Length: 468
Image (spheres, rainbow, N blue to C red):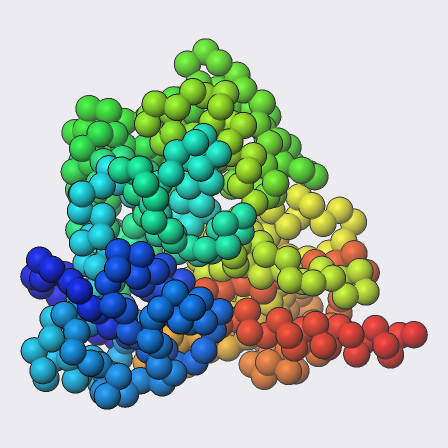
């Protein structure tokens, strides 16, 4: 993968830009806002997609496939860290002296004059950002926003607003969240990940401390997460609001329902307000508390905030139901870290009733799989009834010898609870063979595992026809 120079100067004026990898959720969201500013947008991606078609409808010129000829007379080329150094469009831009900007630099340019709410953390960023945006709209505000996933009720991952408020999902993976002039910083958790960039846990924590202390108005941070508590102890900021289940939290969550529709109580400054959400899972009650803390810090009334949060209907690829075949429900979730997998499967457990949970896990990145194989195995075996492990989605990494999905499956204590099936059609068939009416199948991973869902549905259909 490339390592962009985040210190590279951004042109003062941008009238035309080109996105390499424009179809991704983050890139397409930023491109949409450039179009809304009246800026000419071109781009390319490996294939067509819903995001690509939406951008074309808004006036962008999008090419399928990467080619140096796609880069026209533009002021800047915008990239992600996921590109290979020999990408022909990246090479062409550098050869021609066209400024190459990381997507976070482009976003920083867009938000420069805004009152910025930045949401960071190893897990829960997309959901928390979606909650804040949804609630702000329900409260009568009109913020601009860029999220890492599509907000279900809005059908988009980004949109321009009329207010000075701007809400963004801030990426800590490569330190780019430090580029933003943040007013309100929300830190959902500080679970050390991305050590390929930071090198050490200490460097990872130090980046969050810097991110928080640089916020101009307030810091909202988890009182439950050990890493977040460590960061909190190092802050010099004078306006910190904590949230979570801890008795020490300024915004405390209690009485969380463990089954059925999610309900809970938010305790804040002597008030106890009953809350409910349309999405399941204890982790979402805690995400809602973080969103509440941000919104109350922005000056909104507590009871109105809780009512507004009920409007949140989830985000794409976060426990997203795709179809129900013969009583078997098929979900997809972006979870790609053991903590996220535990949260997603716990949410499924709270609503599956008497059914079982069958996880279809695609490990993401060779380095992460090598580092966390044992934790993934322990988490999947604890929270799912059966797991189908696919092969590793390497994404931006080169393969590491000996690192495959088998590294996860071999670490299960009971081999009867897992199958390592690298062939996707065989994996779909095996999943359908196991599934019974009332079960939940949930695909897990931030790679392309969601693409197996049509095969899963077709295999379920065939299996049900054979049973008739």
